[in-house]
Amino acid sequence: MVEISDPFRQSPRSFLMVPIRSLGVNHRERIIRHLLALDPHDRYLRFGFAANDEQILRYATSLNFEKDEIFGIYNRRLDLIAMAHLAFSTDKSLASCAEFGVSVLGSVRGRGFGARLFDRAVMHARNEGVSLMFIHALSENTAMLKIARHAGATVERDGPEAEAHLRLEPATLDSRLNELFQEQMAKTDYSVKLQAKKFWKLLAGMQELRKDVQKAQSDFPH
Image (cartoon, rainbow, N blue to C red; front, side):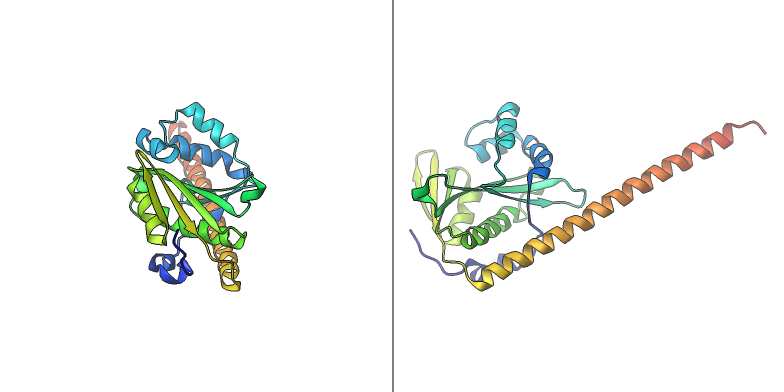
């Protein structure tokens, strides 16, 4: 295993600010829509098998928002385009361990969202006292393994599967303040997007009403 220093000072990508917010139970429906929108190959890479709709629904409905941490990236239409699941160990003897999983819609792949979510999860894990993060992935999932290696993880391949282990440093005042700042920024961004979506929906409704009034006036005999 490789011990690393603070990845947020080492990695230039972490300075590319992407609003990433923690997701609660009220985001479950959007999480379901996101996962169901993954194409068959992306489902295979995310879950390690060709998950069908029923299996995805079972996974999404079993998410424990109190125990684990779920992170998401929304676009301006409030579509969940990328999400990560940081699962904390339920074994008390492994309380300092967590596992990371991520999914990104094919339409926005290549923009570094997976790496951003990984950085965010690492920061939260450190602040929660996690010292060892695991990433279980298929060997062909080169994008995920590249993210892990870039962070300094040790990657071990075993045929079609690979396991990455990343040792984390203890939390610092800087890491805690950084997480508070990023979460507040993400909540503000989400609030702005929500207001914008409501406004455009209201505007569209007013335009439809105006068209109906104009049509009624034109049909009314003079």
